[in-house]
Length: 449
Image (tube, rainbow, N blue to C red; front, side, top):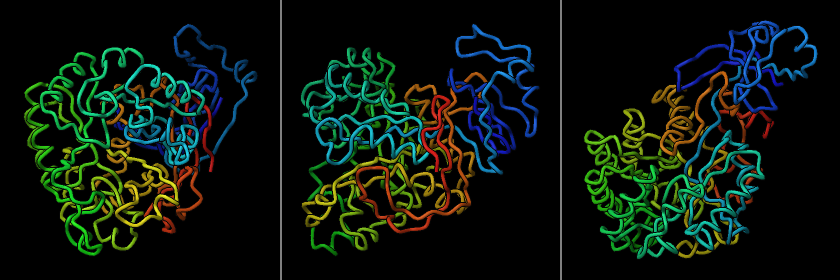
């Protein structure tokens, strides 16, 4: 068993906050007890506890305590929270494993405090069939964390023919997306939303209309002018968000707007949420932290789709997080090799890694600036994404999954030496608050600083 003592527990599901000790059964992967700080172990065991299926009850605290191997860890006031949940990551496996693979992606997740991730499906081959989905999920089982996957909305991400969404759902897909490519066919989107709703799975959309874009990855403004290119105007996102929200409202299907980047799109989501409980949105740490000025400073290491925009957009995203318009924080972890990012700006791929810096950026930009409480931040990084994708995660409860992150919100660390294969981050070299000390998944320590 694992005994975490003298930690400050925050659980967004119950609203519990305060100094608590946590006892974990490492065999069942369940939480045995959450008790006031300093409660003797004998008292925790004396009341008995049940394992996952409730078949076994431990009694006789003294004898059980003698037999049990207790690994005690004094957290000295560090925070205990539900393991973080990222529902938007790219592990590039299969097809692009020189950038990342499922093993290294999972290691990066664990280092960042994440115990559950949902993979995007734009691999090669694409996750548009049960066989590829099976490969991804089985490989994910070999990691220390929970690896889930979306499946594609359309075959080959071509936007022309829907996948067998029912079969993919039955074989473990937790959602549907053609992330990286917008779904331009309105009729096809409407049909996809209907079929996904029958499967009780969300559809998440990349909202950039290519007809507006001259060069992707950079805002059509100061940054594009700096590089002497046309860039990607805000209308590319706004037009798609407006169209797709209307369709989702009409179909009453769960729709998530991915990596929102413009103030206008935030407002469109805000108004749509007033009309329906089926509308969701995610924001990335880089979009609530950086503006297009970072693209001028960092070049391709700040090139991403959708691009970093203006300060008014960054602040609108933060306001959306504050008032609940934006439900969750997702990293859009997008690893690329150093050679790829070293290409000329218009040739280099878009995207940055984010799993290892997400919690720290949330603390620095949202909590320390007074926009969100720590409870609210953890809720948007665990409970909210878990709810949308129907994952058993994002909460701390006796008898519940022992998926936790332990971190020191005031501790400082320097961004370097990634667990990811990639290092394409504009935050390299920065000192950030929020040191992850332990990541625990299924009752096992999968990362220890």
